[in-house]
Length: 337
Ligand code: KG4
Ligand code: ZN
Image (cartoon, rainbow, N blue to C red; front, side, top):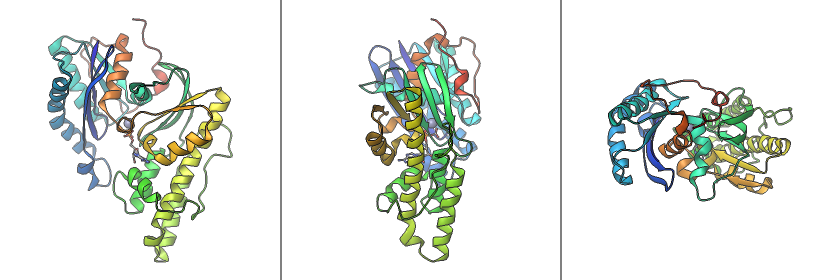
């Protein structure tokens, strides 16, 4: 079975074809980062309009690259995300489904991130603990099978990617700041600024990043007032990254231990962070799985794969589903085919 996957939940238009026998056949991505950078964040209306101009040529190119004329099913991101942006991918997917007489699958964006490591040569077997870290989410999930999710912890306020982005913005690093902040941190001393490790002394596995964000913004203000920001910038970036990574890893290690998980999957944009990867490798005894770097951030390949795994859930009705919010735990296992 060949599944066309379409991602348009935020500021990347992603398209891919996944073959259940041969694996990923082709994928392409158009990033809108440059369009939104001048505004310091994603502007929903601009995102929707740009998806609209990019998506059809991208679908045509990926089908040609894959050597596929009519895939057997079409998967699209139905949420969570920006509703206007989601409607573009959902509209194209449903239109193609109607034209080709093919079933359409509404994919949960975070399930896409969750299965992304399964596109690699050594896919993680179930069960595993998943750390999903992106611009909108920070979650620890006990994954016992597809759709069998126990939410162990989530953020009580900001997502970790958001904390990276806001800190980076305050340091004058532009948008999206996560990768730029990580780069700057390479030249800094990560013990230079004393920052909190929020929640680590509390029971449970929830996260909170607003206290850390406030503390780092105060450090920036103090440095600015002393006229030292140019000298301190890298140290502040490194100290922030260290505190954020320590918090993520502290929670992950205790959740893995308590849930008896020998495998950890890290996915979502912040999973591209090399400091997180290096530290987890040294501090966790078990196996750690990641998607390749290009599939940590939003992409069509993860949506095509998630669709292939949920072929049984295809909806025949021509309804475009676009949900701003959608709880991952509400998915449940795929219907028996
Ligand atoms: O998964 P993703 O592409 O989009 C969402 O679904 O949110 O994640 C984007 C987030 C942004 O906050 C970005 O700054 C962050 O991932 N990010 C990073 C790195 N690369 C991307 N954060 C820290 N270090 C990185 N290397
Ligand atoms: Zn994402």
